[in-house]
Image (cartoon, rainbow, N blue to C red; front, side, top):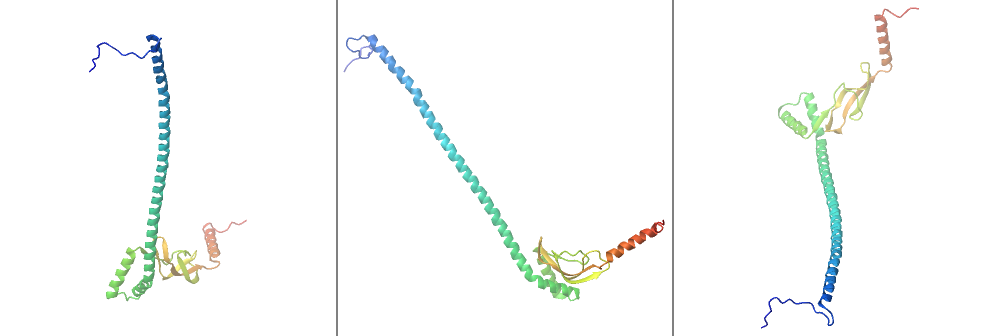
Length: 218
């Protein structure tokens, strides 16, 4: 077993013919070279990490855009499905109520003729209540202006007491669901008599002259 001599320090090998001082500059030079090479390696490693980070950020942005696009498409799909569902429901209800309109017409005629009594009255009123709950609305009144978008004129006449085309009789009421007309009101209309407007204008002028004391004399 070899014993180390206290205080003895190993020194670098020195070539023959060289002094110990010649070895120290070489060691210092090697240390300096190693120190100078280290920063270059760190810079390359940092640049690589930055490039990888940019790639990750780009990929994250693309995935985020894809997710947002998918969410928007899903929301549009849900709205379209909901809109189609409501439309299908409205069409089904309209078709059902359209089939019931002749029954409602019979109920209306029975009411007009005083035959809407007893059990028939109870059943008829129940049917009208159910139809109203499903959104069915009746329209068409005597005296209202004629509107070709909701009225169907079956009879035509002239009347001296109207100033525009007017519904003077409701032959069959119209029905709508919300803003959708499922049957126009079938009506009899009356128009002002030809020349009635001019006659009324003459009458109004004569009345004005009478109130003012007659026409001015020259």
